[in-house]
Image (cartoon, rainbow, N blue to C red; front, side):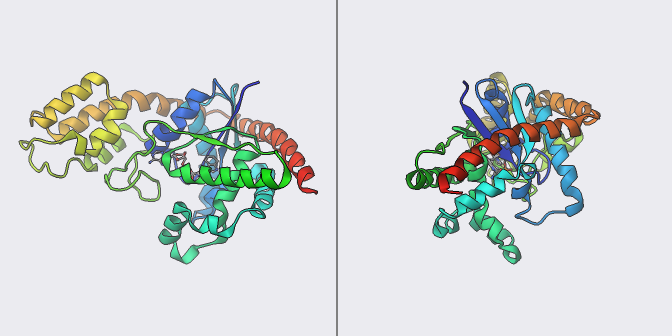
Length: 324
Ligand code: TYM
């Protein structure tokens, strides 16, 4: 019996390289070792403003992109959160044991509220309870995520402990799994890469799109002219991107070239561009190929069914325990 792994992503746009390096590449790696459930969390996506006409397309597109990254449906279950109603049922049950002030202190709640002051809805507040329901509904022990989700997983552990204390051992305390690239900074070098800040590179963007975005990426701000020596350790292009996409040999040459002003930032970005394409082009090609597959809706349906099967049993067990 394999241990269980669960993770999710919001369909608020395409997958960017922060999502990919911080989480999805790890999903792909771990799917061999664990019984894995990956979820497109559309209920979470509606906590912030979105385009009603676009959402269905974004969900399907996310499904295709995750397959293109290497999730294999023979090994993993990939499904849509809103199609498995047990998620919201369990979220309600868990909300009845979650202290209000555990939620108001969450960093993401504060951030998202400050970005959308006109729409501080209670869905945004109880967001981490639904996330806890996602994970516990499959009795997942491991959750591969980026650093920004660690506080939510910690809260999930608190909720599970409280549940088990009141009702007896039922739920599993989840543990996060993070990668070395747990926090990829955006092109602005100031904020975490994110869709909402528009400081990202999408994994299925074209070669031209990627290069035109790289051109705007902030480097070592102290390096004004090409003849000035730079410091790669102060350059986000080096730290967040080269380190993740370039070979050791390229990294050594760039360190030397930058420190000794032998290579300028544009040439450095050209090397990065080539290395990024080596890794991203196969994903883009696979994405285009899968997009033509007429059976995608059936594959989604199958994933939803598989997830529902497991979720139904666990929710029944939980209801039994709480006296319903
Ligand atoms: P979301 O959709 O914001 O991001 C999906 C995954 O990508 C990671 N990530 C990053 N990693 C490194 N650097 C970055 N710049 C970066 N940006 C995003 C995120 O940490 C995440 O792992 N609340 C979650 C979705 C969710 C979930 C769950 C996750 C709902 N239920 C249950 C795990 C388990 C979110 O908004 O992820």
